[in-house]
Amino acid sequence: MPIIVNLAKPKSNIDFGYELGCWLLVAMEYGIKKCLGIELVNGFLYTVSRLRGDSMETLTRLSGGSCSILWGSSEGSLVSSGDPLYLVSGGVAKLLLKASRPGNWFWHACEGDGRPYVQEYGVPPTEIYVSEDMENFRRVLTNVDSDPRSRYFHYMAFDERRNALVATLDDSNLTRVVMSLDHGRS
Image (cartoon, helix red, strand yellow):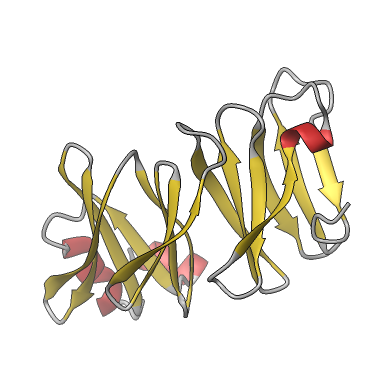
């Protein structure tokens, strides 16, 4: 842990399969203030918890597919639990968005100009969404808008130097990378 803290200087920590929260406690001892844990409780039931003192405090329970924390800010964490996307904040999980097709799920998130972007993965068309206020998300574009032959978005990131949203399309596609210099409006 000291090597990671010295090299990366993390401000937050997520422990998947936290059990008793030992690694979260160690992270807090090294000055990392925001520490969350995700634990699979029973089949498709997950708890999202934080360390409070020396014990774990359950913030919320989510059921669905695989559970992933995609992005976090002072306003809360964006958590994907299969096809729903939640904002977990203050012990409450608020449903923000459902994937465009049943069985699709939210796969990646990134930040650009202070806005969170989330990317859907699965059966086409898959979509990228953005939020101005962490409450409402709007569709930015679909993989089919980028290239009608593509099956899905593979990954996305925001290039701060170019102020550009960058996404990759599926591996078998001729067009592999798409870039928008206006936050996905074109």
